[in-house]
Length: 474
Ligand code: IFM
Image 1 (cartoon, rainbow, N blue to C red):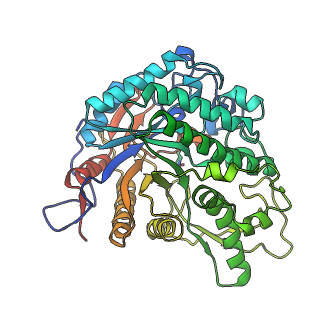
Image 2: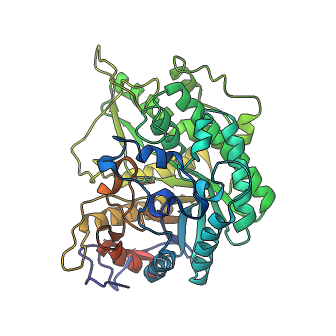
């Protein structure tokens, strides 16, 4: 591997007994277009909501934008070489809708598609399975100008865009996910407004969530029509939600947040209905009049797999007596629920590290919702990294991966059909409203030094995990 930096600090794999993963387990790493590509105005690409948002003063820390990002657009060959050195079996990337269909309607921009043709060809040439996500938050700005995801028509536009991508890449890409984390698109984008497009309208957020799922269902149907052999799924970000105490108020707060964070998406996608308690909780926000006959059947179009992104757990408590609601919230109808910190170790995002929560999450999906093959399509952590003598020893991140992979193994041993794991992220990148101030990568990106890539200790350790298809037993 490039930039060898000596042995990893913890989690060393030796010749002793190991926790082996099933043969063929799909080891990967993930990224997203706006977070790494740059080249924001090249080859016909037009603005997405994230270009507009990041160029609006006060929206992103230090005014960072994705204009250049990791310059992956120009460094794709080098980056795929690094993936090959890691031994990745699969690489999960997203296609930028505004690169491929710059205004969100009309014909494909062939130059934009050419970039993804190059990427996919490089991957295949290195024996790496491409895993394509169609939407990782970069809605073409003209579609937002027409109302964005709260408007029904956006779902149909998404299906049209899907057809363009399937026609161009369907012969070489087997694994497809439609959406990445629709909760973030809907509730961070339209309710709290901390993500693009930055709107603070709870009812619009609920409509956005529905239309994202409708777009997903239509896209699955477009994929099936174009490539009956494709493996198709969607990625949701899930959290175990735990009451801070057994008090009925806390238990009810947990039920409400679980409804908004998890069941808002899992129930329509996998059961074809919205939970009754969630609809009741949202009564003051919406009457669900935007849900038309037949929508839920489209949303629940059968899938081949489900992607689960896991980072942390929510611990919640009932609103304090007489508490005031403070400002726009991620949680329409439950803005007064309080999130509790337990004092356990956190990442640089302030997210509590909770590896057992991954087992709980995967088990819950399998036990309560589906027998589908599951993939952890994202899992990882931000920590402050320092380069010392050209090396980055990210022991905290390595330990995070190690504990979560042990959790993934425990889930498999308990009968969960987990088929793969994608580390978030391959590279340090644009962490949305946090800009470049948070680093999630296994590969350090030196933004001030010609974007040099330095594989961290966690990258070398992960390469060894992949090579052995397992972890040292503890
Ligand atoms: O960087 C994001 C990614 O785009 C979506 N899932 C969570 C990651 C960390 O915040």
